[in-house]
Structures are given as C-alpha cells and as structure tokens.
Amino acid sequence: MTAQAKYYFFIDETGDHGLNFIDENFPVFLLCGVLISEQQLYQLQQAFDAIKIQFWNSTDVIFHSRDIRKLNEPFQTLFNLDIKRSFYEELNKTIKKVDFRIIASGINKKLLFKTYGAQAKNPYRLSLNFLLEQLVFALQDTSYNGVANIWIEKRGRKEDKKLLEQFNTIRDRGSYYFSSDIFRSYIKRLIFRSKLSNDAGIQLADLLAYPLARHSLAPDVVSRSFQILKPKLYQKNKKIYGLKIFP
Image (cartoon, rainbow, N blue to C red; front, side, top):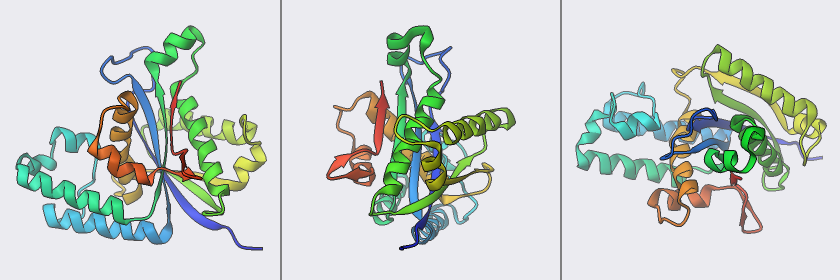
C-alpha cells in the first residue's frame, strides 16, 4: 500500500464575516487555502526571501495584502511606480513557478441575506465547511493521495476559540458529502500561527484572497491578477473546483 503524502494547507481570509454590517462595495467574505508540499513550500520561502532582500534588504518583511495595496509601512517604497511594477513582476513569477493549488470559498453576504434572511447561517462557518469539503476531495485525488495539516493566522483569543470550535464541529459531525471519519482521516490538525511568524504559506494565502474575492464580485470583468491565479485553482477533469462562491 502506497504511503499517503503529507501536505500543508494554509488559510487566510478577506472581508468581514459578520451579517450585522454589509459593505455595498465589498459584500463578500472569502477564505483562501493554499495546498502545498513541503518541498514546494521550501521553494516558496526561498523565493519570498529573495524578493524581500531585493526590495527591502531584509527577510523580516511580512507580506500583507492590505498593507501592500494601501502602501503602508514598509511598502511605501512602492509609491515609485517602477519599483512597484518590478515587485509585482517578481511576485507573479514566483506564483507561476511554485507548484501549489488554491482552494477558496467565498460567501456573498448581500445575496446570502437576501436569499435566507434571518435564517442565514454564519458566513465563516459556511465558508469553512465548503473549504474543508473541497480540501478532502483534493486529498482523495490520485494526483495528491495525501493528508494535510491546516495552518492559519491567529486573529485573537475569542476568534480563534470560535474557529477551533467550528473546525472541530465539522470534523466531529461530518458534512453532506463526508462523514466525520473521512474528515479525520484526511485532515489531521489545525495549527494557529502568530502574525509575526513570517510563514510563507500564510503570506501567499493572504496575497491571493483579495483578488479572488474581487473576481467573485465581478466574474465577467477581465482581471490580470485572476488570469495569473486561475491555473493554480484546484481542478479535476478540466473542471475548476478550487473556487466556490455561495449562494
């Protein structure tokens, strides 16, 4: 019997998951997962470190999508358009070169509330459930045949406790597609990491989440960012399963 391969699955989020407030300009909450092997994770770390040395002369810089978009410190150097263009070229080269797969799940909160009203379920839980189901489908695929530990950035003691409860509920009760035994056999652990831990996988998930969410809101608009990410979405038999938007 062939031993199962071991993978990392890094998760980050974009948008607000609450239903009490819905931003008309960005009414989506999305979880982005990056499925990657240990060898490819090492290549990703090396590539990110090289970019950080090239532009900031330090590997201590942590890529955060919002800070980069807003040009907050230490990304104010990107006010220089030539430097900004060069930075994104190097980032895109890395995304294309490193072998990983994206599994993302988004909730359009505006449509969710319109469809289900007061009966609408928590967007975070919905998104996490969809994400873990697609992760198991991918791990069962003969292309992977593996198990995964999930790595996610800490958000706060209260938030992390709720997330762990939701994660354990899915693994303990199962879902429409998978029993709890199946979840447990493919998804082993949920590991929280500090925002300062400088994990390349979490930073990659953070960088990818926003453009995927933007695409989900305007799928007919041609986006260069999405065209770069599209080949990385998990697919089987030429059908894309790596991006689910609900409802």
